[in-house]
Length: 385
Image (cartoon, rainbow, N blue to C red; front, side, top):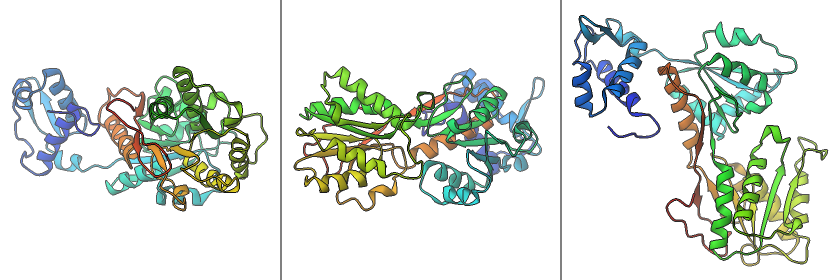
């Protein structure tokens, strides 16, 4: 068998046998071929076949006995239709009741993942987590509420919960950013590497003067998306010998006092970048959120995009609404629509099915989506991103 989507081969085999049971091609009590015969039929190693059978046994779909061999379990049809109970945990106040509905209805990757789980018949819960004044006992949530798996959004806003769930080795997947602790399972875009490689692509296209805008970087230990892309941009500039004008790199640092609900500072950053006598030829916007303020700043300075100034943005996953009213289709690096959500669901379900699952950081590569905001096209070759 070949690995498809993100499921390893042994889980594909387990899924194939399960589908035969649910379709009643294999009936309760029916004997299965030996491990060697199954491995030969599926053209895999015995170790791979053994792991697939272990998953099926764990799910109550087959029974394995040394003397009698392997057979379909008597309760296989009922066990095969069992659904998981999944909790979405996010660092928000208990008063923010509307937040769970906003996430579920929105186009963010967390919402897409939750809707995917709901369509699969899995039960969903919402757990607002407040690290400073917890409303719930953590161990009760993790062990005594019948929750099978967890989707964690904004994990760095609830490090106490992340630490406990990793140490307890409870099935989970975190989105948006990775906490580099043993036992943490994360699905996220490989945006730092993409930002570094984007610099090389722009240089190869003939752009010499580069600019970069990011919002609030937050503290280094939080390793926000803005900080990762800023770090990748600087790494790429160093690797490709790009000399930077300090005015052409605009970010807000953690020591700056910013109103968390007021994003007017993004307009200030964009205007500051465009206020010098010498302008960059191309500006990398570290998030789609920066597209509207940058277009406003360019219009205020009387600059025409892309004739006088090119832009490209780095996206996270699902398309953000910030692009909807942009005057031009913006060139962007992004994960394919829905990829992060699908991968998150796949990894969570793989852990629920396999006790030997190894949690880790899953970094998805970004791809280039051509728009109309670069004056020179990017020639993307295999392996560039």
